Image 1 (cartoon, helix red, strand yellow):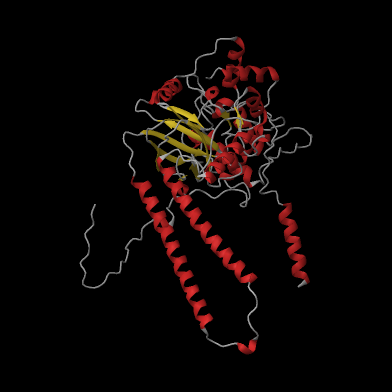
Image 2 (cartoon, rainbow over the protein chains, first blue to last red; image 1 turned 180 degrees about the vertical axis):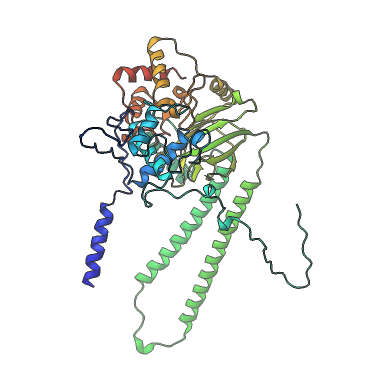
Length: 185
Length: 338
């Protein structure tokens, strides 16, 4: 009994410490500027220590990721990348990254733009919103933990959900002797 | 009637105290056909329940105050008094069932009556619910004459209005109690409502379905005005924004078009054409900002632009950083959007 009590207290404390659902509405108002210290390559000549990658504050925050998803549509990322499957722009649900998969790389891609069509959103989107979009984009290819990233939408699956497809040979039980009613189309 | 008057006064005094805009939001002050029917039903239910309450309390008081019966040795299992009690209880049950049935029938009749009223030559408007504001459209077969505004519905008096409504995100509910009952706005699905305002005035309405963080700050104003005034308003709303003439406003426009504003808002007549946030083409003609949260004046607007999250936490507009010169010129520009 005592063990149960201790265990549940510990669990409760763990839950309280969880930042997954934190909603911080008072974000800094900074406009998006190119993040300093972004490295486009993992190779560093000479003996200098390899710099630490920039971390995204929203990668462990489910609300941030869901906001990123909303902004992804609002700012018309869907116009070119669709819902991750790509179209005019490259797909985002695969693990191929032309300009790097690290959060800082995706951030730089959004803020600075890329040749062949990716526009620069510098100064047009507040910095924290860019980070939210980065978190969402990375969740598309499963780079975020499952408890933070949203489920894939139904229409993104190759096959329709079982509940929304009719059975192949539906067996309809009818009382004997009644004629089959004709379908009115 | 007196009770009605007092409650209506109470509501209007209360509202006058909390908003700068002179308006009324009251279920007991109907200004529309359907609201009048709902009002009748409300008062019927109110009086029936009041009578039931008084009778119940009277019976209870009598039971509490009654003196004790004679001692136990005189007790007889079934006597006359017991038979009388049984009769009283039976009558009470019969009255209860009948009055509840009566209320059921009258509420069904009210619902039927409201549903069977049909509008003649209606004005069609569209309402789209957003977290946490209302998008209002006056569609026209000529797309350039379609009017899009926010949080303020203008309707001509005595003309039926058909409202087609849907939602962009979660379920909202449209409720202007002076005019009609509630209508849910459901994402991916169109619902319709028709109403008619019989008297000039400004009626406040609000979201009646919990829709998230700022549900309480999701109000709208229904302005019923004479057909002439309404047509003048509609004509004026159809025009695109004029390019500003003075230097400060021009600077403000430049700022608007080159910063974050342009990502979400539309100002017809400029390159700003995003429909994420409210259409600002005629922002200065509206009486409130942020869905009825604040009166529309430069001070409130400036505070809203700089940090709307301190006014309405969780709303979709991010805080914006700019120096005071830029803010002043932006406000000057927004003031020109009449």
